[in-house]
Length: 127
Image 1 (spheres, rainbow, N blue to C red):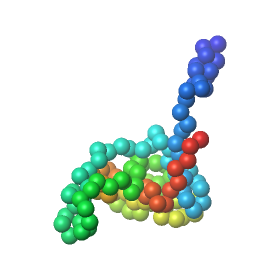
Image 2: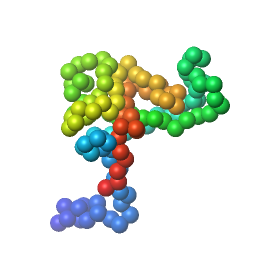
Image 3: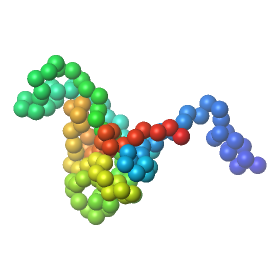
Image 4: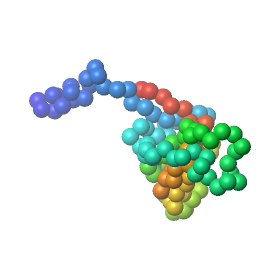
């Protein structure tokens, strides 16, 4: 009886829809919202070396990628590489990269270790 009460409380009307990320090419699920690792927004272009800065206005941009925990489908991570590209398990399209020693986000913040999925290669879906 206690199990039935616990199950009914999980299905409340105020429950927010879950956010998942899918490969844009084959629509395979690659991550869910609970796998996303948040980071503090960087200082934008001021965080990059002067040669990598554009000549435009000094503004903080939105992150071009999401960072996630290492997931089971990331085969190159399982093989023991320090840094490598991440490919979709369904269609073998490149959807991101990882580096155990960290990567710099497009907003300027450093994320260590970094498992980056590019927003241009994945779709955000609510279920």
